[in-house]
Length: 394
Ligand code: C2E
Ligand code: CA
Ligand code: CA
Image (tube, rainbow, N blue to C red):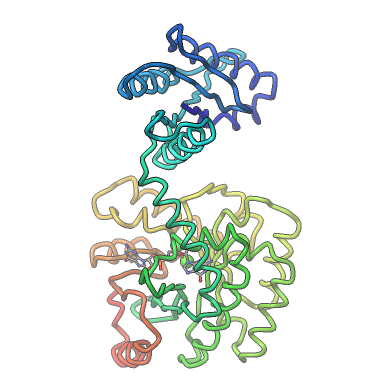
């Protein structure tokens, strides 16, 4: 079994290493208290432990032990008089079914641990060959991702943004059509592309596509483009963006860049400079997925945002959940006091739209207005929207 403590790092970082060491000692004692005299426990490194339960004869016994270990970490640790909640996740492998060498067994329990952590921590998971398949699929995806750009498997869809019943522009959303696997959602390949350092190149391509596309729209329409953290941190970003705008001939004030709070986590001088430079160029900046990540309000004081986008998490249950209503109302007022616009994402019903309208939310985006559209459908959408001017039904 492999154990990994959940949330050990914050304790170590905030209370100091001496406190971290004490916590590890208490953790070790809790582990030992669960074992029978034939079992062995080791500390591998940092907050990782290994337990070997020999001759248990039956996987069920190992499972029970793993459950006991998880349960033993449910109570808080007391460190320097403070209560610290540090759980544990456990990955189990069994010999001989999952392997016969230490290497094989470690690999199997490692993968089981990885899965346990991904499924929400504080749980035990036994190795299952399906985990390997999943990992191999990810590897396959990762390899084909490298070819996707050159093989032109990417394309961009555009989702309308509505303001006061009118369409004011579109958000560019990246799509990947894999030749064998079909449509792959951005949420599963963008983090991968980001981890593999491909996002700057892919993002540059999206920006170019989006600017070209926007040139075909009415002159008062904006185009919103998402910027990932990795892209934001590449040097020469602002030069590259203004070159693209020049080349395509799109006025800077028709481009809106959407960044998330994770981009701003490292509040370096560079970050602030980049945002200020973009601002001076006349490019609009919006803060995406607001309320979901770190939500440090100090960003709002430091950075020149034009728009705040409220995450759809708060919009979905708006009609019934008083807490969501309170949060949304508060964000709208805050944004307006700061002279920023507010967009609500994921608006699907008339009821949501009406409620948002009543609290003064500026822009709406969501299936109610339209799903993201392929390029071929935009012309007609714009024609209809311009003809009716009430298409957005705000
Ligand atoms: P996002 O920026 O928050 O984009 C909004 C997502 O909400 C899109 O998902 C959109 O299709 C979906 N959506 C819009 N209206 C509704 C609605 O009414 N109901 C529901 N349930 N969903 C709605 P999508 O296209 O799957 O994109 C997911 C995420 O991937 C985006 O979230 C964005 O973070 C990222 N992404 C997409 N394209 C790009 C890109 O070109 N570059 C970067 N860096 N990230 C991108
Ligand atoms: Ca976005
Ligand atoms: Ca968003």
